[in-house]
Length: 199
Image (cartoon, rainbow, N blue to C red):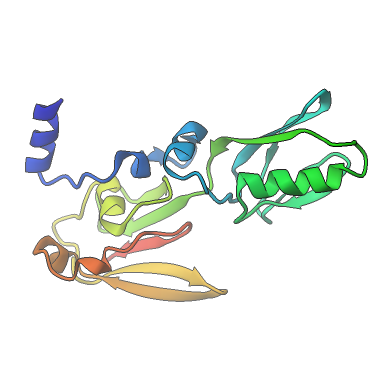
């Protein structure tokens, strides 16, 4: 194992924190157990799948999917806002609403599939596309997932495109400087939906 890691490092592959990256393609999803290992406060997003269980009530035990509008529907209580909420937030809201119908409801909520944390790498990389990733992934790790830069890539003109309050923000990233150990602070953590553009 040690020999394999050393050979990968000597080949220039950027190794991130394994729990934070673990890439899968967009049609797959990260196991929920992985999220709980490195991000206990994981905030939900569209396409994540939850298992909601109400003790002693099989009709109120079911999987729900967070819709594109950030909500999911549940019997008796209607729509629940899930986007940017934690599992504990959701559990508390369900308990509050179900109390009208069930005395002292015992509710558990678990993430069964994580599919919302996606970033996109486009342009002159070897494997452009959409990646489902963990929460803590920086620009270098995203470029590594995409197979690295092609020979004619503009390594000092890379931009991270981010939606902020309905607008677009372009964050510059100079790969050449990072490679020389300079301006390391520009290797920012990516957020859900960020697009890394390599000209």
